[in-house]
Length: 223
Image (tube, rainbow, N blue to C red; front, side, top):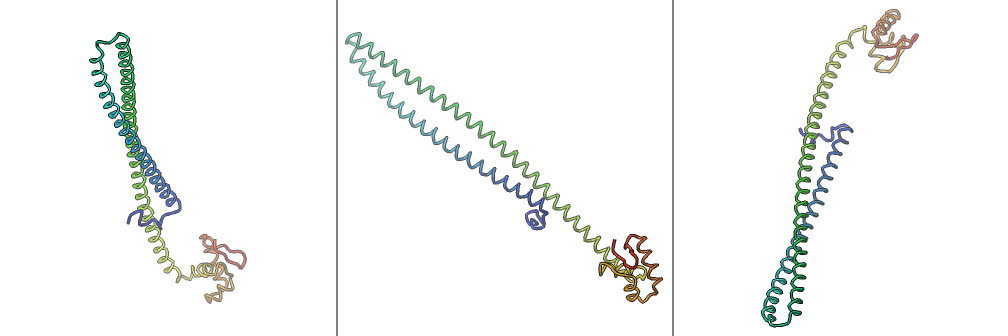
């Protein structure tokens, strides 16, 4: 029978340990779920940025093409106009470099995120191994408890058998009378057994020497 099937038979300490394990497993599940949601958000952001970059690239390609056509048309114009066109080209180059830098930064962030995901997966595997080890320890503990219960039951059965044998021994009958009522006295035992008072006192004193009863005058008590 597994630990889960015998949960009702666990001690309070075992139930507490088992509850802690369940809460720990739930907490790990929530952490993983949060990380999964965060990863999904980042993936959506990456996709959005890629779409934006692609859109900007198409726009700039069109602008560059237009500027190239315009340059062919303005070859005959003044140097001032040519300088303006060069300034515009320089500005576009700066913007292109800026977008390139942003793309590289985004790539770096993605790599960092992938590294963090790998670390979380490793941590999850390590915690799973710890949980498995604890489950195995619980299984071993449950088996030991079952063995101890069986041993105790066997000993109780043997003691009951021994008691049933010695109950008929006149030298132990006063002990069982005291055990039944919690305490007794010499006169009660004398009447119950039909023995002489001297015989009863001798038997009771022998029982006291064996550590089974305590004699206080005419009163007898269990030890």
